[in-house]
Length: 300
Length: 151
Length: 176
Image 1 (cartoon, rainbow over the protein chains, first blue to last red):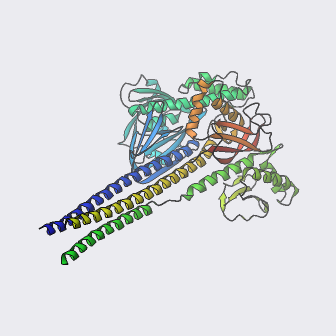
Image 2 (image 1 turned 90 degrees about the vertical axis):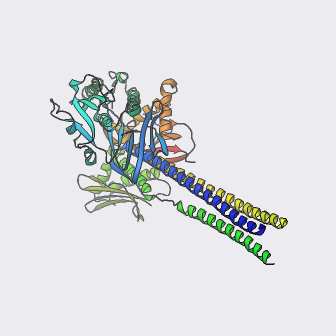
Image 3 (image 1 turned 180 degrees about the vertical axis):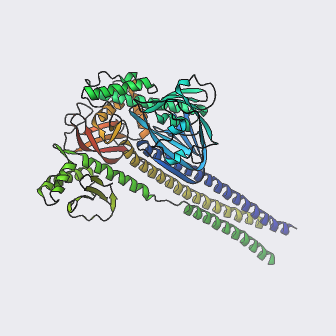
C-alpha cells in the first residue's frame, strides 16, 4: 500500500509542478505580449509626434495606413496642452503642434492634412487628423452676397481630393449660415456663421460648438472646427492654445519692429486680436501703407 | 532488488521530466529573443539627406557675392562656355569655400551647372557614384544646376 | 524506507532549486536584452526626432523670411534677433519665461543657434549688440551647452542690406 502510494505521489507531484510551471510561462508570455503592445503603441505615438513636427513646417496631405484598426484619442487639458493616445496604451503630450480631429477615432487608415493659419501673418500650420471613413454632411443655404455655399467654401482648389471625399450625405452635420444671422449659440449643433472678407481674402465669423461660441479669422480655424468636436472642452482648449501661439508670433514681430522704429511707429501689436476681423484688417492696411508710402519693409 | 530498480526508474522519470521542462523554457526564451526583430528604416535617412541637399542648394543659389548673387556668377560662367573660361574662377573659388564650411570633413559632393554644351562641375573630377540629389534648379535660358551629396 | 523517502524528497528539492536558479538567470539575461533593445529604440527615435526638427525649424514662421505673408526659403536675420530676444529676455522674466520653457519643452533641445559661415563675418554673438555689425552667431535658445549637434545649411537674409548669406542651423540635443 505504502509503495503504491509513494509511486502515485511522485506522479502527482510531477504533474502539479508541471502545471505550476506551465501557468507561470503562460502568465509571463501574456505579460510580455502586453509589454510589447504597450511598447508598440508608444513607438507609434513617438513616430506620429515626429511626423507632426515635420508637417508643422510644410503643407502636406497624406494617408496613414496602420494595416489594422487603431484607436486614436485626442484630448486637451488647460495648462498641459494637447495629448494623443494610441490604443489606450501609448500616450504623449504634443508640445507646440496643433492637431485637430475628432476626440475619439478608430480606423485602420487616417488622413492627415495641414493648412496654414494666417491672421494675417502666418502663425503655424494646423494639422488635421481624421479617420478615412469619417463623413461630414454640409447643410445650409447659399450665402446671398457671394453666392457661395458652405460646401463651395470647402471646395476650393487648395483642398486635396481625399479631404473633399469626406463630405457626403449621412455624415456628421455641419451647418453653414450667414454671419449677419448670428445671434448667439443656442443649441448643441455645429454651426459656422461666416462671411468672406475681400481685404483679407479669407473667411471670418463665429463657430458654435456644444453651445460655446468662438470668433474666428481664417479658413484654417474654420476647418479646425469642422473636423473637431468640443467634448471635454477639447476645441475650447485648442482654440486658446492657438491664440497663445499667435500672441508669441506677434511679440516676435513687435520686437522686430523695434529694430526699425521709424517704420513700425504706427503699428501696435499690443492691440492685435487675432479673432477680430477689424483688428486683423487694421494690421493689413497699416502694413500696406508702410510698403507703399514709407518705403519700409513688410512688417510681416 | 526489483523494488530498487523501480525506484531508480521513477527518479529517472522525474529527472527526465524536469530536464524536458528546462529545455522547453530555454526554447521559449530563445524564441522570444528572435521575435524582437529590429527594422532598419533607411527611408528616413534618405529623407533627411534630401532636406540637407535642398537646403544647401537653395542657400548657394541665393548667396550674394558683391553686387551679384551666385546664380548670376554661374550664369556668366556658363555663358562663356563653362570651364576653363576665366569667368568660372570666382564661382569655383567661392563655391569651394562654401562647401568647405557647410559640409562635414569627410563629406563629398558633386555640383554641376549646364547650359547646352557648356558645363561647370565642382570638383572637376568627381568619384561620386551614389548619393542624395537635391531638386535641380532650372533657370530661364536653359540653365540647370544640380547638387549631389555623396554617400 | 523513511530514509529513502527523505532522500527522494531531497533530490527533488535539489532539482527544483537548480531549475529555479536557471530560470532566474534566464529571466535576468532576457530582461537585460529587452532593456537594451528599448534603450536603443529610444535613441533611434530621438535621433530621428532631432534630424526632423532641424528641418522643421527652418520652416517656422517665427524665423522664416516673408513679405506680406508670402514666404521665401530663407531665415530672416531680424527675426533671428527678435526671436532670441523674446525667448531669452531676462529683463522681463515674468512675461517671457513661459515662452522659453514652452520652446524648450516643444523642441526638447539644449541649444539652438544659427551660425553664419559665408561670407566671413566677425566673431561674436549677434544678440548682444547690433546684428548689423560683424557677428557670426545668432543664439535662439540656450539651456545647456552639452549634447550632440545636428546641423543643416540655411540661407540667411539680411533685410537692411537686401543680401543673403549662408549659415548653419545647429540643434544641440542629448539622446542618451
